[in-house]
Image (cartoon, rainbow, N blue to C red; front, side, top):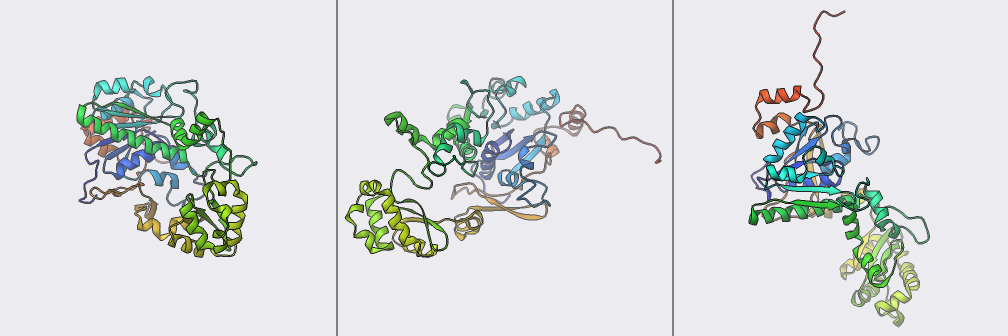
Length: 413
């Protein structure tokens, strides 16, 4: 770690979470300078370590791209929370930490006597962050769910895809990642409150509320006007043009939601579009949606994507080439905006996406590669006051997983 002090320097975060939403939130805390300790199951660790290893990841690295994307700036210790010894270690760490994150199913932390009432009694300053699928109460409280399930439940998937065709999932784990930002916001607010009151609190984030937040204005349209929106492909019911258009070598997105922007768009693309009085206003263009779209397409089909982007960008019309993942990842603008982080892992230089913001005075930084499972056990426990013989005794009692069998002695056969 360099001499730059992070915004959360001195804050200890215990990350009991796995897969996407929780680890993504914890990584942001790490990027901000917090000491993030990743608590993992002794066998296998975080399930994300192994996601998609059959494709898309260099097998020499030994872990998945998903794991590498969401777990930098953390230290790892394996604890078996099914054992009294493992839980005792966890509780001792919690007593001396600022933030706890977990995404166990409802009831798990209560069963282990590590729920918020028990832990806040031992550490009143603790900010206790819990992720849920559907929330801590209600008829679906005990249902398991992931990003795809909430895309379906929330109605998001019903808005995605082409009209009159089967629904399509959003390709990214958008609800998980949105939920991670919700948790970060809530925890930071709770830490600020603690500065005034001296007391921590429980904070909650759920995939349900994260998915609802992503489609909030669609819900409001339904509650206010009874409107149930349907999939429109890449189009948007709020304005025209606002979708993908074909080009001579691919596709571009053009968005001109106001009459002033439409005027600039029409002039930049083709003067004939501007000469049509029936397209002048937002309402006119919405009424003649199909006609306007075809008129624009008749122009864009003749032009290469880069020329359309240059023309419209120059007159401040919202425009973008439709890139594939490789094109977007290698675009110079991502690097220029500070969107690429890198670290050494397994003898290779690995790139990952940075946290989605920048701080001028206390910038985010990468000072630690994603950890191997249980890589920092002795280091972490020493930081929390454990002596060597205590650690050995804990290992013998299964705190870090099943003790290794005693080695047999004797002559070789």
